[in-house]
Structures are given as C-alpha cells and as structure tokens.
Image (cartoon, rainbow, N blue to C red):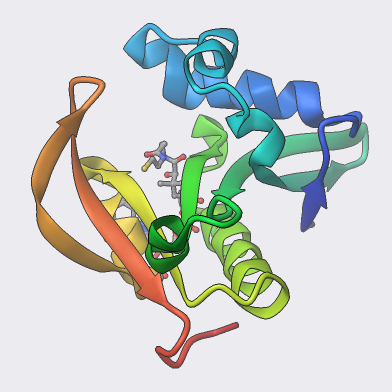
Length: 164
Ligand SMILES: CC(C)(COP(=O)(O)OP(=O)(O)OC[C@H]1O[C@@H](n2cnc3c(N)ncnc32)[C@H](O)[C@@H]1OP(=O)(O)O)[C@@H](O)C(=O)NCCC(=O)NCCS
C-alpha cells in the first residue's frame, strides 16, 4: 500500500529521497543534490518535502517524491506566481502505477488548503507534460530549454474544480 507523507529533513527516509532525486532527475544531467544546494542556497530548507512510501513485508521503501517551493515571504511577485512544484520523481520500476498522482494530490491539497496558495506551477520536462495534463494542469507559453532539456511551463489554479 502506498502512503504519502510530508516530511522534514530529519526524517529517516530523507536520505532515500535524496537518492531518488539523484537517480531519476539529477544524475542524468550530471548534477547532484550537493551541487543543487550550492547553486540554489536556501531552497532545500524552504522546500516542503512529500514522499511516497510502499509498505512491503520486508520494510518500508521510498518509491516517489515531490517538492513544493512556497512563494518567498514578503515578495508580491513570487506570491502572484504561487508555489513551485519541483523535483518530482517516481522509482523507475514503479512508474505508471498511480504513485505520481497520489503525490501531486497531496501536494495540491497542502498548497491550497494549508498554505492557501491560489496557484501552483512547474517547469515540466516535455516527457512529463502528459502526466501533468492528466492531473488537470495547463500548459502556458512556449517551450524552453532548462539544463539542456526541453520544458513547458505548466500551472494549476486553486479555483479550478479539482480533486482536492
Ligand atoms: C512523471 C512521473 C512523476 C509520473 O509519475 P507516475 O507515478 O509514473 O504517474 P501515474 O502512474 O500517477 O500517472 C497518472 C496518469 O498520468 C499518465 N501518465 C503518467 N506518465 C505519463 C507519460 N509520460 N505520458 C503519458 N501519460 C502519462 C498515466 O497513464 C496515468 O493516467 P490515468 O489517469 O489515465 O491512469 C514519473 O513518470 C517520473 O518520475 N518520470 C521521470 C522523472 C520526471 O519526468 N519527473 C518530472 C519532471 S518535470
């Protein structure tokens, strides 16, 4: 059974979250979480961390993660943009089982109900755009490159009737 948890960096599964982000997202572009933390100081601390855990007979296994970067305090431009969904990854052997869906539903619920944000956005790799569209997210603007990978800006508004 898959459970989605909101964790802080002192959670015992946090090292597995880092490992999954590196495996799925960062190593393929020659990056690491250490380098990310150096180039984006303060982000790791600001992130709200969501993890998906599979309870198996031989123990719990982390199978997915998604991070929410809330708007910067006291920055109206950042508040208007809303929260940024980042570093969403599902174990390559467990994709297309609904784990990504469960993660994004929890992240949306937290962003809209708890943080009272009006909007979420992300830079979606082209290959992941259909996944976000299935979740009701909309493409905005033109395609752009980030870390050498084509991306689309996608967003999700709190007003849109949704599953939250
Ligand atoms: C993108 C990702 C997070 C999706 O997670 P997932 O657990 O595989 O997705 P789910 O199983 O919850 O899929 C939910 C729905 O989206 C669809 N979907 C998922 N990935 C898809 C894809 N690449 N293309 C088309 N449809 C897709 C599923 O078929 C499912 O459809 P349904 O509602 O009709 O059943 C995951 O595949 C992943 O980690 N990919 C590699 C890293 C990545 O691209 N991260 C995002 C960076 S922006």
